[in-house]
Amino acid sequence: MSIILGYLCLLCFCMLLVKALTRKMHLKKADVFFMRVHKYISAALLVIWVLHIIFVFPVLKAHNIGVLITGVLTAATMLLLIVLCHTITRDKRLNLQVHRRLSVVMVLGIIGHMVTYFVD
Image (spheres, rainbow, N blue to C red):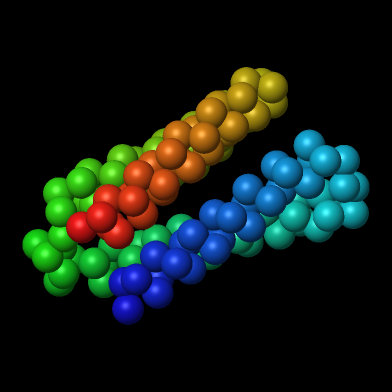
C-alpha cells in the first residue's frame, strides 16, 4: 500500500510541476487550468503524503537508511515550502522565488528517494 501511495504522491507532484512548464512554454489555457487546480492538487498531495508515512512505518526497517533520510528531507522541504509560502505573502516576488527554489530541492529529494529505494 505504501508504494501505491508513494506513486500517487509522485503523480500529484508531477501535476504541480506541469504548472511551471505550462507557464514557461506560454500555454495560457493549460496554465490557467493548472493554476485553478494547484491548491487542490497540493492538498491531495499533503493528505496522500501523510497516508504514505503512516503505511511506511511497519516496513521501515526493511529498507536502507538512505530511503528514510531522503524521505525525511523531502518531507521537511515540503513542509517548509507550505509554511514559508503562506507567511511571505506580502512580497509576492520573494514568495515565488522561495517556492521555486524549494520545489527544485523537492525534485532532487524525490529523485534521491526513488533512487535509494530502487537500489535497496
